Length: 392
Ligand SMILES: Cc1ncc(C[n+]2csc(CCOP(=O)(O)OP(=O)(O)O)c2C)c(N)n1
Image (cartoon, rainbow, N blue to C red; front, top):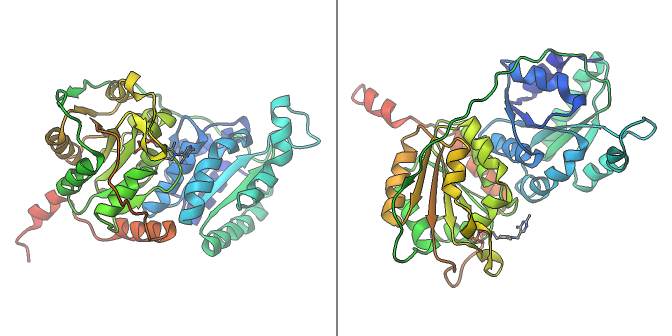
């Protein structure tokens, strides 16, 4: 048996700053330890795909994420693994349990995944090995993981068989309900276009702010308006922009502005709960709601029937603005950038895009690397800058 304390210390030694996931009984000791261990931050989420994109955000923010999952959650991880971490060459550690190991009695729902877990990781080009149950071999396994992360800049996985970890007590605080009232700015006669909303957003943001934009035309329009090192364009991983932004935001005092679509937001509605509860104070989540999947031909999303700002407020976002026009957007952005968030800004926009829309010429891996460098570059909070002004 290995103890969870050594495992967490070993992961922290690899540079893991954030551990995040959904429990599995095989993982109980490691989660119980991660929750209380001062060496890492643990984030409970609603779904393993969120854990994967938070881990991606942790790397983009200059740290390293470890996403933990029962192997039945591998399916939930596949989308961000294949369409975000793989193309952007983002390192992460995965800790995946091995329910349904062939030859071990287990529940019927684990049989098939138990048989294919290793092959599934092979298929999605993720290196892996069994987590050793012998403390002496743990160090070597962690060293191999470090080498793999350095060599490939992709996720590397440990598969955790039953009974690998010694028991660990659970000390956890519970969450309390926090709801906010929505600031409703009033409806506009005509909804602005996405490009004009993005133009206004760029005009309002301080240069220190990082921007994470959702897949499809939002990222393409943002890129067309201005291609800057502080932009991270999601090329895939629909619905993951907010959790990527959360992972980034945990690693930097900079404002992090997520630009989302209504279809993408609704695809991962659980993320609103994750952001509301973990409450990144400098994260501003802007939802440009055109009511349709504009990028794929304009089919309706469900958003016309959903009060997105009310959902965000019920999930614990600290500030929520329902905007009617671009001036409201500017007011709400200034409010969000000031901190005290997370802030959700909802703006109804008109469907459609500009003609001659470009696609990023920089590769996702280049975008990721320069974004990570940007986050790590010197940053002084505006308050600090003014208080030290004149000191030469
Ligand atoms: C998992 C997944 N399903 C479907 C798609 C195809 N897809 C790309 S963009 C998009 C529409 C996104 O809609 P929304 O977030 O409302 O943004 P809009 O296109 O309206 O700007 C879809 C369905 C995808 N990229 N990933």
